[in-house]
Image (cartoon, rainbow, N blue to C red):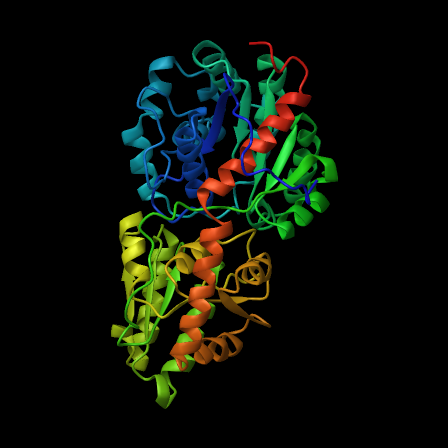
Length: 452
């Protein structure tokens, strides 16, 4: 189904109600999945569809509020962690659960998190994936009962495959169509330790049975997850991420100081060290002595110590003033950030399922430089908005960056091509229309889908 052609004017969903289950990140770092989900929810609402959000774990990071004030946060992160560590709390009184799930406490917990690493969370992930057959059964009951009482959805869109433990209960007890997005689950699961890692992939494959259709954000990732989860061709669509283009524009002037930009969570696992090494190589050349590196996207826990070490290294080299980290990565500030860089690079070691930051850069007329890994080549070939390099080593990245930094006309031409392509093929409107087409097809195929 990955090659399915979608009409850009699908029929309306009429009276169908859509529940979108979204795990929040707390807003402490640039979360691609959160931005994707929130933008899609807002656009579906603008197009007249009846969509509500069921948040999980932490408050949602988004450019616009999509979280209804009277909707609780299910599976609160603090509550889940304490119940996992102290099983006797699984039967905690309602007042204690309410306290642990309060938004104030959850936001505090998100800011105080020492790490977003998957290592050490293997057993908790398995518990979540087991669903009604595991220790989270009471929490699943709470979610299902609330949905049945307050919303009675016809379609439930699950944000990612790590939440598939919900699918069996949702489908059986609410008799609805289940859609599940796929984006970067492998980066999380493959970082875990065995034998739990293999067990997690096995459970996810088993739980896929209860999903009517999966939506992958790229052809690369559809192929990846079909292999890892044994998903058949007829159960997976490719719908690229789209962004709300309002406010993005090309700068009238090239930055006076050549500047590399990095837009993502500032952490080693996303290639920041590779970029730092390439930056140092370029700074040590006579032609780019005034080069700067600007970064934004948030620092969490261990990443603060990591960046402190980088700053000490740059200080020894005399480059400490040339790394500028912007703490505010709200939509307005991201647009402003992109107006002041020459080129953007987020050299994730093994690539990613997509790269929303690439769309944001291209929408601003900024060329991108990415490793020939994951979906990056697919996206750049579709837009002509950047260049790739291989292998993903600092010297190769430095050469690729140099080729654009020293040739502003070429960089401007590539940036312009990317902007045109994003506006044509990667808008949030186009993503929403394609998603609705999937909803319509699956509702038509789901028994009793027209019961209301």
